[in-house]
Every structure is written in structure tokens, then in C-alpha cells.
Length: 303
Image (cartoon, rainbow, N blue to C red; front, side, top):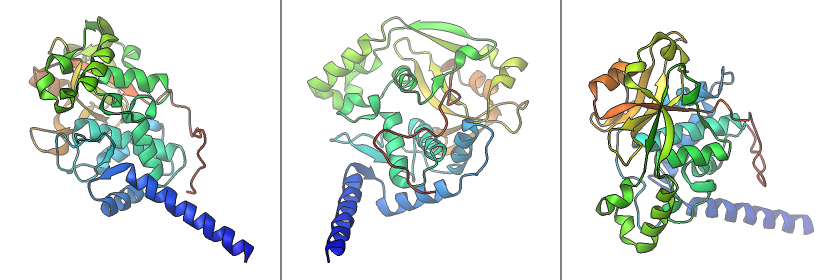
């Protein structure tokens, strides 16, 4: 009888934990999303050349998924998970979170949710709207500090440096409903103050077509497209896909103009030449990620 009581207590605790995990997440469709995430994790290849290959694998899984803007915006800041529709940033974060989960040899949708949160939010913790990593410069710095991935632009054979003061959000307060709240505005303003005269490397559009630069891209690299706006660093992002190490890199991205996740019809260099709203790209990758590390205080799920 005592053993049965203990078992019932453990089952109740497990049920409470599962309910808590769900309550902390805003799904598009909980049943469909959790089922789809589990199926994606189960479909991952058992062997892969490097972490970027996993990112590319999952990114390709979303080809044809509808584009949807502003899916993260809501009165309350909690983790939003949408598999049925994506924008350029949520597409990249979702593919990377799936890759992280497989690299950790985990297979639960809860592990994916944990990884998505640690990519999207400062320190991996949700503490209101300003804790979301809105600027790509901030996203890159925070994730590098925590060992999730690194900006590898400076490893390319041809790159330049740019200096910008990033304050687009507070300079365009009316575009962001959450900034009507003075506390949110002040916190974002404080974050922006850390990016005054911010120096970052980028590869100019003119240099993307060189043979050495094209060869330096890996299948699965994350690329962030540098804006022409003077107080903003990046206005679009996606994932590089290559058929072979020597092949031209193409951009796999959630396209707002075509309304779907797709591979660009032109190689990356030609894609940017055609779109003058971008000056070049920054590149991020999981190359420095420590393979299959365990999270503190978390027990691995079976695979």
C-alpha cells in the first residue's frame, strides 16, 4: 500500500509538471504543435557532419510553411511556439532549437521548448517584453556569452567592420505597442545604450560572390542581412543551404514578399545584389558549441 501511495504521488507530480510546462507556453495549436515537434525530432538523422547540418535539415522541413508576422506579440510575454506559421526570426530560432535538442540527445517537445526559450530570451529567462532579444546584435552577443552559438563572420576570408548606434525601436516607438508601457520603453532604451557606436563584422554584398567566400559558407549557417537603416543592424535573416561544400550558397528563409518559407531562386550573392535594402550579411554558427552538454538541474529524456 505504501509503494502504491508513493507511485500515485509521483504520477501526480509528473502530471503537475507537465501541466505547468504547457501553461508557460502559448501554442498555435497545442496538440498539433507538440505532435509535430516530436515527429520532427524523431525524424532527425542519426549521423551528421557538424551541428550546422542538423540546422539545415530542420530548416528544410519547413519549406512551404506560411509566413506570418507579429506572432510573438501579445499582452503578456510568454514563450510562443508556432509550427504552422513563421516569420524570418522564428523560423531560424525554431530550426536551431530543434538542432540543439538533437545534439543534446533529447527527444521531447519539452526539451525543444526549453531550447527555444534559451535562444530567444536574455539569459534564457522570460522577464517581460524587454527580455526578448529583439535586436540581432543583442541576440548574437547574449547567445555567444552563453555558448549557444557564435558570430563567425570574422573567420571569412573577406569581411569588413561597421559601426552603428542601435536605437530603432525607441526611435520608432509607435511601431511597437509594448513600448507604450513606460517601463518597457525605459528598459529597451537601457539595452540600446549598450549598443551605441557598436562595431560588428559583416561581409559586403560585393564580396559574397568571391570563390573563397562562397566556399567558406557551411550548409546550415545562419545569415543575418545588414540593413541600410542607420540605427538598425539587421532587418532579415535565414539559413544557408548548399548542395556541396563547393556549391553556391542559397538563402532558405521565411519570405514576407512570397508569403512562405522557401529557398531563394538566386544564389545568396545575387539575391542581395537584387535587393538594395541590404548591404551584406553577418554569419552565425554552432561551430563552437560544446557537443551534447547537459543542462544544469535537468535530467535527460530517453531517445
